Length: 250
Length: 93
View 1: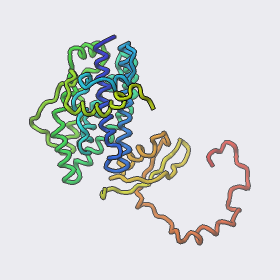
View 2: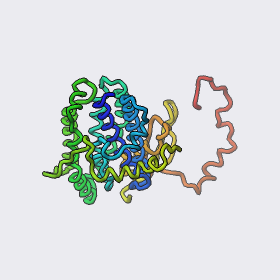
View 3: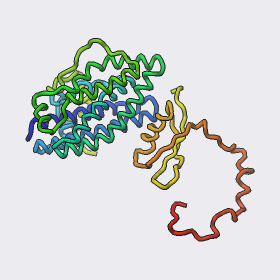
View 4: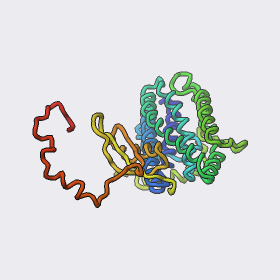
């Protein structure tokens, strides 16, 4: 058991799972049929990434657990995702911008992790990276279209930006254990990720003529399992079946 | 939705084959139509290449002209390339 690596893998997996679950909430509610299919495609990709990372976490832990146990039988305080990924889906602008922020992050994260000295992690990151590139193409295209179209779309994009901006620094939060993992070449250097992310996102901000909000509540706590009230409700719905009918399969 | 345009989607199933019409979809512009086509029509690895064409750019024959346009070809068997052997190496004809 390597507790630090295990916790880190949970962070990766929990982030993808919560993003995937929120996107899945669009199923049948997309703005139009084609986009409905596209959103749920991405959702399934993200849940697939979560499954890979949970699998590695299980192997690292050496415990007799399955990826499903980690996804469906842990409570909110055991989740390690940043608060951004658990936020409700909001409107389409909100979902799109949140996805863009996370896609840019994932792109640089998985590029770095694909060089990890932990081989299973490097392999999983390579696989995820291929899909993330497409996710980013999509979310960026939508950000540009919404920001540069009708007044209502612009206003909704700016509102989403105001609401989400101060959740983004938490993506790059590290603790002592993560710094040690980075020193060992096992995980990414998050300060480097942050500079890549800021560069790329600021390009989009100027292209989309978005106004950076001056102040707001700086989200934190996910790394320590301190979450927003939203995660509990999400897990209640997502985990209901396994909680009510343990081991149920179909 | 009122801003959406209709696009026709063509997919090449594998290298060497023609792009074939598979259906249509709505999108705000051509780039988005390509992405939507990728997500709607190639989810099960149906293709390796996609074309999209805005439906309004397709000029179609009039269904009312079906008989006068197409029936005359019916009894002209000599137009079919069936009177000579085809080399085995020629695939996908």
